[in-house]
Image (cartoon, rainbow, N blue to C red; front, side, top):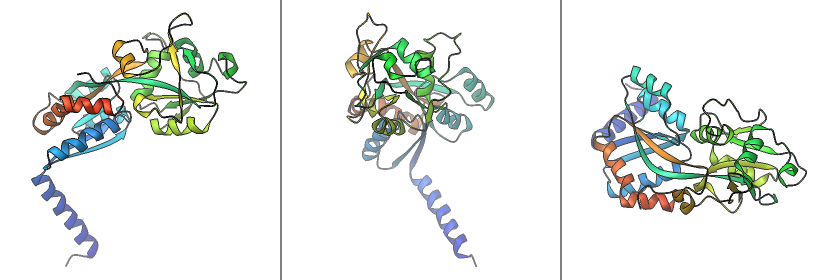
Length: 283
Protein backbone atom coordinates (compact mmCIF):
# COMPACT_ATOMS: atom_id res chain seq x y z
CA UNK A 1 0.00 0.00 0.00
CA UNK A 2 1.37 3.43 -1.01
CA UNK A 3 1.99 6.01 1.70
CA UNK A 4 0.10 9.31 1.45
CA UNK A 5 3.15 11.24 0.13
CA UNK A 6 3.76 8.64 -2.58
CA UNK A 7 0.09 8.72 -3.53
CA UNK A 8 0.36 12.50 -4.06
CA UNK A 9 3.51 12.11 -6.18
CA UNK A 10 1.89 9.34 -8.20
CA UNK A 11 -1.25 11.43 -8.71
CA UNK A 12 0.89 14.41 -9.78
CA UNK A 13 2.84 12.26 -12.24
CA UNK A 14 -0.37 10.89 -13.69
CA UNK A 15 -1.90 14.38 -13.98
CA UNK A 16 1.26 15.77 -15.63
CA UNK A 17 1.42 12.91 -18.14
CA UNK A 18 -2.29 13.25 -18.90
CA UNK A 19 -1.83 16.98 -19.43
CA UNK A 20 1.14 16.42 -21.75
CA UNK A 21 -0.78 13.85 -23.72
CA UNK A 22 -3.80 16.09 -24.30
CA UNK A 23 -2.14 19.50 -24.60
CA UNK A 24 0.55 21.21 -26.66
CA UNK A 25 3.12 22.61 -24.25
CA UNK A 26 5.80 25.21 -25.11
CA UNK A 27 8.34 26.29 -22.49
CA UNK A 28 9.84 29.79 -22.94
CA UNK A 29 12.66 31.20 -20.79
CA UNK A 30 15.03 34.15 -20.81
CA UNK A 31 15.13 37.93 -21.06
CA UNK A 32 13.47 39.81 -18.19
CA UNK A 33 13.03 42.75 -20.56
CA UNK A 34 10.82 40.58 -22.78
CA UNK A 35 8.83 38.74 -20.10
CA UNK A 36 5.83 41.09 -20.09
CA UNK A 37 5.66 41.12 -23.89
CA UNK A 38 5.94 37.37 -24.33
CA UNK A 39 3.53 36.73 -21.45
CA UNK A 40 1.00 38.98 -23.20
CA UNK A 41 1.48 37.01 -26.42
CA UNK A 42 1.06 33.76 -24.50
CA UNK A 43 -2.15 34.86 -22.78
CA UNK A 44 -3.84 35.94 -26.01
CA UNK A 45 -2.51 32.92 -27.89
CA UNK A 46 -3.95 30.50 -25.33
CA UNK A 47 -7.36 32.19 -25.49
CA UNK A 48 -7.39 31.50 -29.23
CA UNK A 49 -5.85 28.03 -28.83
CA UNK A 50 -7.37 26.53 -25.65
CA UNK A 51 -5.66 23.17 -26.19
CA UNK A 52 -2.19 24.74 -26.12
CA UNK A 53 -0.19 25.83 -23.07
CA UNK A 54 2.65 28.38 -23.09
CA UNK A 55 4.83 28.76 -19.96
CA UNK A 56 6.94 31.94 -19.74
CA UNK A 57 9.68 32.57 -17.16
CA UNK A 58 12.47 35.17 -16.94
CA UNK A 59 15.96 34.97 -15.48
CA UNK A 60 17.89 36.89 -18.13
CA UNK A 61 18.94 36.34 -21.74
CA UNK A 62 21.91 34.23 -20.75
CA UNK A 63 19.69 31.96 -18.66
CA UNK A 64 17.27 31.52 -21.56
CA UNK A 65 20.01 30.66 -24.03
CA UNK A 66 21.60 28.25 -21.54
CA UNK A 67 18.22 26.56 -21.13
CA UNK A 68 17.83 26.22 -24.89
CA UNK A 69 21.31 24.74 -25.16
CA UNK A 70 20.63 22.30 -22.33
CA UNK A 71 17.28 21.30 -23.84
CA UNK A 72 15.17 22.55 -20.93
CA UNK A 73 13.15 25.06 -22.95
CA UNK A 74 11.68 25.27 -26.44
CA UNK A 75 12.21 29.00 -26.97
CA UNK A 76 14.79 31.36 -25.49
CA UNK A 77 13.97 35.08 -25.19
CA UNK A 78 17.03 37.27 -25.66
CA UNK A 79 17.62 41.01 -25.75
CA UNK A 80 21.04 40.41 -27.34
CA UNK A 81 22.49 38.32 -30.14
CA UNK A 82 23.68 34.87 -29.19
CA UNK A 83 27.45 34.77 -28.60
CA UNK A 84 29.81 32.66 -30.69
CA UNK A 85 30.87 30.64 -27.64
CA UNK A 86 27.20 29.84 -26.97
CA UNK A 87 26.75 28.69 -30.57
CA UNK A 88 29.81 26.44 -30.26
CA UNK A 89 28.54 24.95 -26.99
CA UNK A 90 25.12 24.38 -28.57
CA UNK A 91 26.64 22.52 -31.52
CA UNK A 92 28.44 20.17 -29.13
CA UNK A 93 25.02 19.30 -27.70
CA UNK A 94 23.40 18.91 -31.14
CA UNK A 95 21.40 22.11 -30.67
CA UNK A 96 21.08 24.52 -33.61
CA UNK A 97 20.08 27.99 -32.30
CA UNK A 98 17.78 29.65 -34.84
CA UNK A 99 17.37 33.42 -34.45
CA UNK A 100 14.10 35.30 -35.03
CA UNK A 101 13.75 39.06 -34.54
CA UNK A 102 10.34 39.75 -32.99
CA UNK A 103 10.43 43.40 -31.83
CA UNK A 104 12.57 46.46 -31.20
CA UNK A 105 13.28 48.18 -27.90
CA UNK A 106 14.71 51.47 -26.73
CA UNK A 107 16.69 51.41 -23.49
CA UNK A 108 15.57 54.24 -21.22
CA UNK A 109 18.08 55.85 -18.87
CA UNK A 110 16.23 56.97 -15.76
CA UNK A 111 16.78 59.04 -12.62
CA UNK A 112 14.63 60.02 -9.66
CA UNK A 113 12.07 62.76 -10.45
CA UNK A 114 13.74 64.99 -7.83
CA UNK A 115 17.01 64.96 -9.80
CA UNK A 116 17.35 68.23 -11.79
CA UNK A 117 19.37 66.51 -14.55
CA UNK A 118 17.19 65.79 -17.58
CA UNK A 119 19.64 65.26 -20.44
CA UNK A 120 23.03 63.61 -20.92
CA UNK A 121 25.37 62.79 -23.80
CA UNK A 122 26.47 59.21 -24.47
CA UNK A 123 29.94 60.27 -23.34
CA UNK A 124 28.58 61.50 -20.01
CA UNK A 125 26.63 58.26 -19.62
CA UNK A 126 29.81 56.27 -20.25
CA UNK A 127 31.61 58.38 -17.66
CA UNK A 128 28.87 57.91 -15.07
CA UNK A 129 28.41 54.16 -15.46
CA UNK A 130 32.17 53.48 -15.59
CA UNK A 131 32.71 55.57 -12.44
CA UNK A 132 34.79 58.34 -14.06
CA UNK A 133 32.01 60.80 -13.24
CA UNK A 134 31.04 60.21 -9.63
CA UNK A 135 29.10 63.30 -8.50
CA UNK A 136 25.92 64.73 -10.02
CA UNK A 137 27.36 68.28 -9.90
CA UNK A 138 29.79 67.25 -12.67
CA UNK A 139 26.84 67.01 -15.10
CA UNK A 140 24.78 69.95 -13.85
CA UNK A 141 23.06 68.28 -10.91
CA UNK A 142 23.21 68.55 -7.13
CA UNK A 143 26.37 68.00 -5.09
CA UNK A 144 25.54 64.34 -4.48
CA UNK A 145 27.41 61.10 -5.07
CA UNK A 146 25.95 59.14 -7.98
CA UNK A 147 24.44 55.73 -7.19
CA UNK A 148 24.88 53.49 -10.26
CA UNK A 149 22.31 50.79 -10.92
CA UNK A 150 22.81 48.10 -13.55
CA UNK A 151 21.31 44.78 -14.51
CA UNK A 152 23.36 41.75 -13.50
CA UNK A 153 25.96 40.32 -15.90
CA UNK A 154 23.68 37.52 -17.12
CA UNK A 155 21.30 40.11 -18.56
CA UNK A 156 21.24 40.91 -22.27
CA UNK A 157 20.35 44.47 -21.29
CA UNK A 158 23.57 44.67 -19.25
CA UNK A 159 25.62 43.36 -22.17
CA UNK A 160 24.00 45.72 -24.68
CA UNK A 161 24.48 48.81 -22.51
CA UNK A 162 28.11 47.92 -21.83
CA UNK A 163 28.95 47.31 -25.49
CA UNK A 164 27.08 50.30 -26.92
CA UNK A 165 27.56 52.95 -24.21
CA UNK A 166 30.59 52.08 -22.08
CA UNK A 167 32.61 50.54 -24.94
CA UNK A 168 31.16 52.79 -27.67
CA UNK A 169 30.76 49.81 -30.05
CA UNK A 170 34.54 49.28 -30.03
CA UNK A 171 35.31 45.50 -29.94
CA UNK A 172 38.80 46.26 -28.61
CA UNK A 173 37.51 48.22 -25.61
CA UNK A 174 37.69 46.59 -22.17
CA UNK A 175 35.66 49.24 -20.36
CA UNK A 176 33.53 47.88 -17.51
CA UNK A 177 30.87 49.15 -15.15
CA UNK A 178 32.21 50.90 -12.04
CA UNK A 179 33.15 48.42 -9.27
CA UNK A 180 30.64 50.13 -6.99
CA UNK A 181 27.69 49.70 -9.36
CA UNK A 182 24.76 47.87 -7.80
CA UNK A 183 23.84 44.88 -9.97
CA UNK A 184 20.12 44.21 -9.69
CA UNK A 185 18.25 41.10 -10.76
CA UNK A 186 15.48 42.70 -12.81
CA UNK A 187 14.37 45.85 -14.60
CA UNK A 188 11.56 46.19 -12.05
CA UNK A 189 14.13 46.24 -9.24
CA UNK A 190 15.95 49.10 -10.97
CA UNK A 191 12.68 50.99 -11.41
CA UNK A 192 11.83 50.62 -7.72
CA UNK A 193 15.30 51.67 -6.52
CA UNK A 194 15.34 54.77 -8.74
CA UNK A 195 11.88 55.71 -7.45
CA UNK A 196 13.14 55.81 -3.89
CA UNK A 197 16.71 57.09 -4.32
CA UNK A 198 17.31 60.69 -5.43
CA UNK A 199 20.97 59.92 -6.28
CA UNK A 200 20.34 56.83 -8.39
CA UNK A 201 20.62 56.33 -12.13
CA UNK A 202 19.74 53.16 -14.00
CA UNK A 203 18.50 51.82 -17.32
CA UNK A 204 15.82 49.43 -18.53
CA UNK A 205 13.62 48.66 -21.54
CA UNK A 206 11.00 51.24 -22.57
CA UNK A 207 8.23 48.94 -21.38
CA UNK A 208 9.13 49.70 -17.74
CA UNK A 209 8.87 53.50 -17.99
CA UNK A 210 6.53 55.02 -15.41
CA UNK A 211 5.88 58.41 -13.83
CA UNK A 212 7.84 57.30 -10.76
CA UNK A 213 11.10 57.73 -12.71
CA UNK A 214 12.33 60.57 -14.93
CA UNK A 215 13.55 59.58 -18.39
CA UNK A 216 16.81 61.17 -19.55
CA UNK A 217 17.04 62.61 -23.08
CA UNK A 218 20.23 61.39 -24.78
CA UNK A 219 22.50 62.96 -27.43
CA UNK A 220 25.66 61.86 -29.20
CA UNK A 221 27.41 65.07 -28.03
CA UNK A 222 26.53 68.51 -26.70
CA UNK A 223 26.07 69.88 -30.23
CA UNK A 224 23.53 67.19 -31.18
CA UNK A 225 19.80 66.95 -30.54
CA UNK A 226 18.79 65.38 -27.22
CA UNK A 227 16.22 62.64 -27.91
CA UNK A 228 13.94 60.69 -25.56
CA UNK A 229 13.02 57.03 -26.09
CA UNK A 230 9.73 56.62 -27.96
CA UNK A 231 8.35 54.27 -30.59
CA UNK A 232 8.78 56.93 -33.30
CA UNK A 233 12.35 57.76 -32.28
CA UNK A 234 13.39 54.11 -32.13
CA UNK A 235 11.90 53.35 -35.56
CA UNK A 236 13.53 56.42 -37.12
CA UNK A 237 16.88 55.67 -35.50
CA UNK A 238 16.98 59.08 -33.79
CA UNK A 239 17.16 57.50 -30.34
CA UNK A 240 20.70 56.17 -29.93
CA UNK A 241 20.16 53.41 -27.36
CA UNK A 242 17.88 50.99 -29.18
CA UNK A 243 18.16 47.32 -30.07
CA UNK A 244 16.35 44.33 -31.59
CA UNK A 245 14.68 41.68 -29.42
CA UNK A 246 14.96 38.02 -30.39
CA UNK A 247 13.61 34.59 -29.73
CA UNK A 248 15.75 31.52 -30.41
CA UNK A 249 14.54 28.03 -31.19
CA UNK A 250 16.38 24.76 -31.80
CA UNK A 251 16.46 24.87 -35.59
CA UNK A 252 13.82 26.48 -37.77
CA UNK A 253 10.57 26.45 -35.75
CA UNK A 254 8.19 23.57 -36.37
CA UNK A 255 4.79 22.46 -35.11
CA UNK A 256 3.71 24.18 -31.87
CA UNK A 257 6.81 26.39 -31.62
CA UNK A 258 6.24 27.65 -35.17
CA UNK A 259 2.58 28.22 -34.42
CA UNK A 260 3.43 30.46 -31.46
CA UNK A 261 6.21 32.34 -33.29
CA UNK A 262 3.89 32.92 -36.25
CA UNK A 263 1.36 34.43 -33.84
CA UNK A 264 4.03 36.75 -32.35
CA UNK A 265 4.90 37.97 -35.86
CA UNK A 266 1.29 38.31 -36.99
CA UNK A 267 -0.51 41.65 -37.18
CA UNK A 268 -2.24 40.92 -33.88
CA UNK A 269 1.03 39.87 -32.26
CA UNK A 270 2.75 43.04 -33.41
CA UNK A 271 -0.13 45.14 -32.10
CA UNK A 272 0.57 43.58 -28.69
CA UNK A 273 4.20 44.73 -29.11
CA UNK A 274 2.96 48.32 -29.35
CA UNK A 275 0.51 47.90 -26.45
CA UNK A 276 3.33 46.71 -24.16
CA UNK A 277 5.45 49.78 -25.06
CA UNK A 278 7.90 48.04 -27.35
CA UNK A 279 8.40 48.77 -31.04
CA UNK A 280 6.89 46.45 -33.66
CA UNK A 281 9.02 45.20 -36.55
CA UNK A 282 5.87 45.05 -38.66
CA UNK A 283 3.36 47.93 -38.84
